[in-house]
Structures are given as structure tokens and as C-alpha cells.
Image (cartoon, one colour):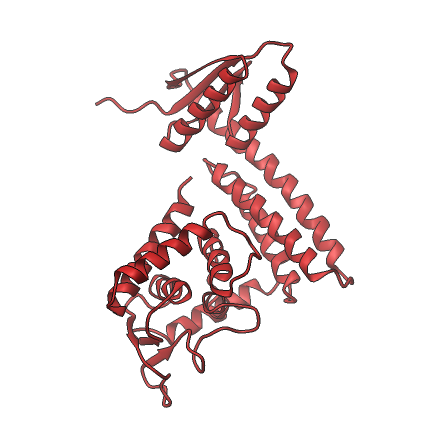
Length: 319
């Protein structure tokens, strides 16, 4: 049975006089996570996204006055594929180590100083964005990934005024709390919007897989089996500068790159801010508006919103 070739190769050539074009092409190859195999021949895994990336780059090279060809290949020599995988892992490991140095540098600058909160937030967010970008290019699981993730999580906790070593305790407390919120009815206001759609998805995905949802005018007084969320009083709702989605993430210690992306989108849309300015936010906002216009039934609206956020989360996990 024939199998698809494992690798994509980009062979290109640019005139030596076009130094700016050569630098631009090299930077684009770095942004795509490609590694060199021979002079002017770069490799990526054979995936749909990588094919699209190489094809766009091929067109850019031609537009710059060069020549380029994209083709598929398999390594048939003994150990050839392993050598390519190792090259990817070593390249990403160097990137992760460079990021760790910047994380450590910023963490040191935060000790004993009252930094401008906005500048501090922007600096930490920039490092998180770099990590997320690196993770998307980490096709084969570089060894430095987990150490970088831990260092970044510690920096984020310090920036939020928490102990940088509190993650294990916080996660344990979150898991313990989740056990107390199983098979519950989660109640919220009518006509769900972006925060309630995303929060319902978070609840059913990470907290209570058997959760049911209902719409009420006021939260329950006696507690019972009902749990209120995103209501004006009681239950899980806005807190300080956090939307309900972010509060749920904090209360139940839910962390993942996809959840972080969604939290930033929901924060800006729900609070009408541009704190994170995620590129997906305007489209998500339009989708929410379209769902609300197309569904008169609140239950159907919430289910469709949850499905949308599930698809969005899966898209962030695709490398």
C-alpha cells in the first residue's frame, strides 16, 4: 500500500545581487519553521498547511526575481528521516532556549519593582505570543518545550501577583473543585452572547461533561443542584477586570494554549476592549451576532455557540 511522502522540499535560487530578497526569503523560512537540508533546499512536514505555506513562499520568491520548486520526498537512506526530525527538534530547542532567556530577564526585572501595569501586561503577552508561535512550529516535540511552558506560566503568575511556584497547588485545588461540580444544571441569563457561549463550552469540555443548561431570570437562592454563571449576582461571573470565561479558568485551574487564545478573544469582545487585539476577534464577534440573529430559541443558540467555540479551539490545536 502506497503512503503519502513524509516531507515537502523547497528548492530555490535568488540572484546574488538581490541581497534584500535573500534576507526576506530567509526570514520567511524561519517564520515557517523550515530547516535546511542542503544549500537553498528547505524541508517541512508534508501537511496541508505546510504545502500552502511553501506554495505562497514559492510565489513570493518568483515575484522577487528568483526561481523555486516545491516537491515531496521520502528519506530512503537508513536514519535519514530520523536525522530530519532531529534537525527540527534541535532548531526548535534553540528557539525555546532563547525564549527562556527573555522570560528569565523579564522575571528578574519584575522583582522589587513597581512596573507600569500596562507595559508589564504587554511584555508578558508578547512572550506568550512568541511561545504560541513556536509551539505551532514545533512539529516533533522539542525537549525544551515543557521547561519553557513552566517558566512562562511562572512569569504570568508573578505578573498577576501570585507566587511563581503556586501552580501545582492551584491545579490540585482546581481538580478537587471540579469533582464538586458534576452532573449539575448550569443556569444563566436569556439570549446568550459571546461570554456565555464560550463559558458553556468551557464548562462542558473541562468541568462538567454531563452539564445541562437552563435560562432563568434570577440565580437560585438555595443553591441546590443549580450553578449560576454570567449572571448579575451570584455564581460565577465577572470579577475585577475579568469576564466570566476568565473567572472560570482561574477558579478551576484550566490552562491550555487553545483556552488562552479563546480567553483573550472573549475578554476583548465581552468587555469591549482591545487589550489583546487577537486577529480572530472581529470574526468571532460577527459569528456570535449571526447566531443570535438566526436562532430565536435560547437553547439552540447556546448549543450552536458552543459548537463554534469547540471548532475554534480545535483550530488552535492544529499545527
